[in-house]
Length: 246
Ligand SMILES: O=C1O[C@H](COP(=O)(O)O)[C@@H](O)[C@H](O)[C@H]1O
Image 1 (cartoon, helix red, strand yellow):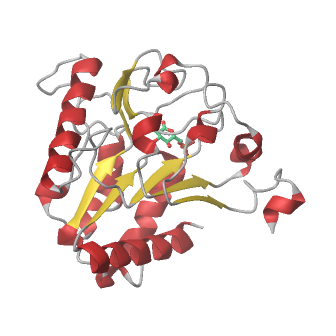
Image 2 (cartoon, helix red, strand yellow):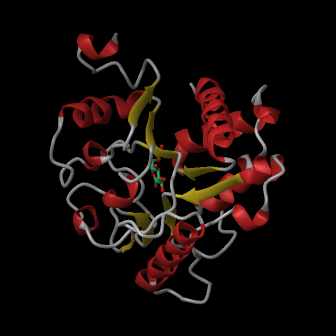
């Protein structure tokens, strides 16, 4: 699944570059996101992309010191970032807890929102609401509890409608302090790809596809403007109704 998704992502990025010159991808952490990045580093078509014209953003981050092995950015660096010729100025990790905002996750989230707004202004998308650059593909790993990014079921962060980025306190999955794009920010992306591999995602995938209340099932609120793509392996698809399995 990771290899197939990597091939699909290479195509999507190359198409965006052909159409608009650059491409913008939002990365996810977690097992499925990291497997995808490792596959992307090895993808046969990866040299068909001009990596120096790709902006990389993050959908969420564990609010830990820079270089902490549990940070999504650290894991992405190990799996992918050092393997392709990216422009360092176009890699946009979320702030770390030892940065200028200290342990203030809300201030760190506001700083990331400002960075996104500046990028929106730079690419001419700044007049819109929310103020975000155009995301060509936004990746989300589905959590076994249906969380996406760091938006957890029943957590007030899921209901955030004004901000594009929010600090998340008391997350049920460690570490408890996180930063996350909000659902309106996620829904601004052209394409949202939800990744689910493994038996422990089967219940969540079936639940998310059937649910309509994002507060209880955050993955149900993750939609792309143009396309929403669910990418599941056989184990994660095991509980879907036969009609959805094709
Ligand atoms: O903590 C996180 O979890 C989810 C899903 O992770 P997985 O290991 O169950 O696949 C991930 O999407 C998110 O980015 C991450 O911070």
